Length: 91
Image 1 (tube, helix red, strand yellow):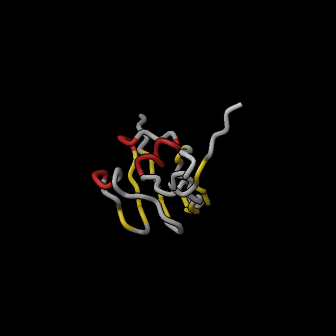
Image 2 (spheres, one colour):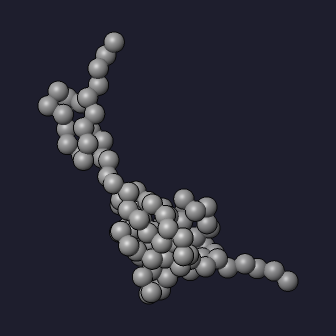
């Protein structure tokens, strides 16, 4: 049997173990509901997790409209509040 050392918080094991980045989840609010997300999650990744089409939504981030150009670089932090509206077509 082979043993494997797993280190946390991105530190490598002195025994040559596998490095993993394990971070505490952060609590945010999405459309009034509390959610826990992995630290470092981007707004774009949040949309993917929610199964939303990025072409059909607008996002309010901490009471400010978040431009689509910022979705990839904006990372969630504890206490952030998101309101996400989805455009729906119909006749």
